[in-house]
Image 1 (cartoon, helix red, strand yellow):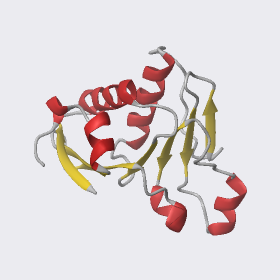
Image 2 (image 1 turned 30 degrees about the vertical axis):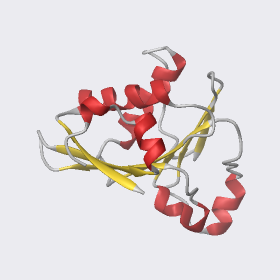
Image 3 (image 1 turned 45 degrees about the horizontal axis):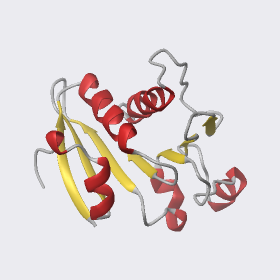
Image 4 (image 1 turned 120 degrees about the horizontal axis):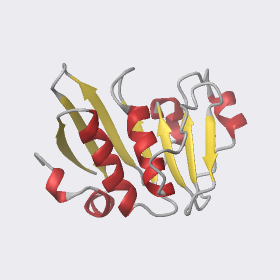
Length: 156
């Protein structure tokens, strides 16, 4: 596993990162979005889904209450928000199948526990104040090299 640190000046930078990663994503990719409330997980997911759909106005509600939302894009996207999960039973009932040929965006991936796929791109977003945001991006080297835009990397 490798990791890279990105500095994200604002919400636009978070959205730009999401669009760049979306452009390089393919079926089977799993992107795990971590960070506290308000760090930008849903902002990232919304920009990512709109980029894959090629529709900047697509309504992309947070799946906080539905838990999972599937988009019939090409490739399909499964967006899950696991914040409300109480345990393994809830996770099993969701029926997430990472072998499916979709792109997966998973918010609150810590709720996956042992079910978290090893071949995933993890993005830990943090907000340090009005003008300071970071993204710690980690995953297998080949996945990072394919998905992470080199021009955005501020440290390795």
